[in-house]
Length: 89
Image 1 (tube, rainbow, N blue to C red):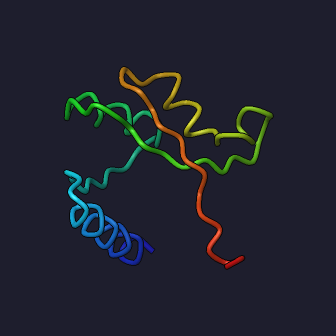
Image 2: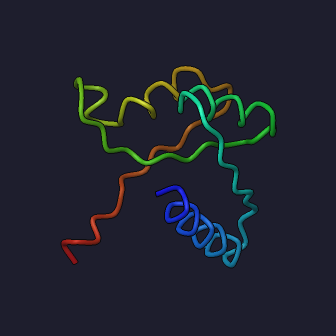
Image 3: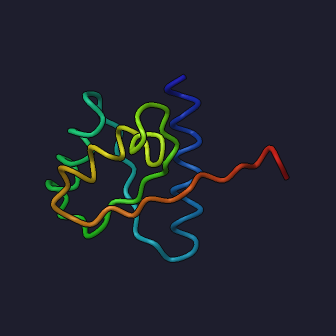
């Protein structure tokens, strides 16, 4: 599963770089929101971009529990985007 996910992330990184965005692919283990915030702080990023797809409480249903926690703990802005529904196209 990790190998398959990594290859998809690598392709996404390439696609983003082709349109002029600076990216760096980092894979870490741990509590997701804590690791995302820690990497953002360590790398001095200017923006965190995350998808929304939550499944729990009202706020979490709107943006997702990990995304909600990143927003709450992040020292930088967090841009939340709606995931594409490629199956309906």
